[in-house]
Length: 188
Image (cartoon, rainbow, N blue to C red):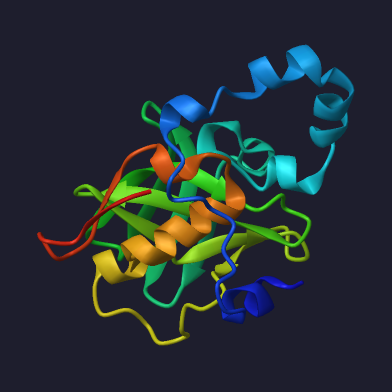
């Protein structure tokens, strides 16, 4: 079932909101009894559906990588803070360390960063067919009005839960997600 179809299916979602962090023992415990299954799972695309950005093979192989798109120059490179995502308009620039890389890279890879305690999806993603950066699927072609909008878009807590729910394991209990509303806080 394609992701779009799963999103529309009533009641279907891969996460279990009642799981607590202590119920997840991790792969090191699983391998003790299920070594053959663990080894084969590590070779599946799902085992590589997400990684911390610092562990991304794509970002390691394409360092640095940049794209000029309209008035903005986008760069992803290794820095003191890890993998740094920067946008410049020629006069000013803003940068944030990338936290996550979603996607194995067979088609592409999209990046997540945090700014002021909020999670954002990068405006640009890596595409295998291009061997470079281009607009992240779902981001419009309209030129952003400012550097912050050029960096990416805010991910609301429900969408963030869904992203991590499909791309990671036990993410429903790994932390707190802030939305723009001070009253709307949710567990990942």
